[in-house]
Length: 271
Ligand SMILES: *[C@@H]1O[C@H](CO)[C@@H](O)[C@H](O)[C@H]1NC(C)=O
Ligand SMILES: *[C@@H]1O[C@H](CO)[C@@H](O)[C@H](O)[C@H]1NC(C)=O
Ligand SMILES: *[C@@H]1O[C@H](CO)[C@@H](O)[C@H](O)[C@H]1NC(C)=O
Ligand SMILES: *[C@@H]1O[C@H](CO)[C@@H](O)[C@H](O)[C@H]1NC(C)=O
Image (cartoon, rainbow, N blue to C red; front, side, top):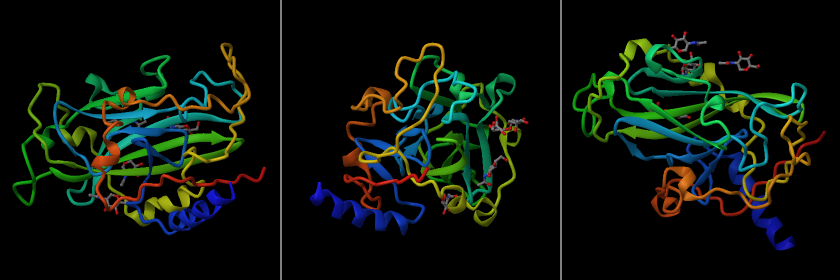
């Protein structure tokens, strides 16, 4: 245990200095400032195909109950919204803002999707202006570098948080017209500056639930609650199948510019 403490402290120092491109990744899972754990895509992945797919474990690997939550539960996810934005192209698309729009051009509440599943596979049809193949071919192309921005509105042990977790990806693989592609302007939002967003202040809670995190979740029961201690299963159930297949190879495929924290990050809560 003593041996573990030093590297933990050492890495925590790095985390404190972390730039936006530092991620806490373990077994292919990316830990966030919130209950959600990103199974896929991995940061830096080139994406394309018919849909963009985001796989999120919304239970912190089984530690938080699935909804419905008890009304007065000290811990719960209120909602998760996801945007796809780029300062390079000036676009800020709604993947989901909690309310499904006509023809699912933006998606409804992901917490209500795939009932009973701890992993939500968010699949959103690419908007028309991202159709193409390869890198952007002109200065006014909307293809190229984007962030998937995962916004979590949640309560942890009686405290409310709204956190912002951005995952860089590139829209450079082939995207074809499928018939259901939303018009870009119908799902576009104004782009705010980093100062207006102030992710640093939003994320003071820090990255949660990575291996070694001692946070104990207080939660009060729902009707079908059989595990009220809040500690949850000791072994996360994550496997590559949960993560659209990227889990197994993730460690090998992450670019060297991303830190991989195999050690733990300690988060202390003074209640
Ligand atoms: C998310 O939950 C918070 C707290 O209940 C609420 O104020 C906010 O309007 C919700 N946002 C969405 C998009 O549902
Ligand atoms: C992605 O987000 C980071 C901050 O989280 C930002 O510095 C970067 O410019 C963003 N990338 C794009 C293409 O907008
Ligand atoms: C959700 O996004 C859609 C599409 O951008 C928009 O029409 C709708 O007004 C948004 N709803 C909320 C609650 O922001
Ligand atoms: C994108 O739009 C949403 C909804 O208006 C907003 O909450 C978010 O901060 C915007 N993101 C950026 C990078 O401007």
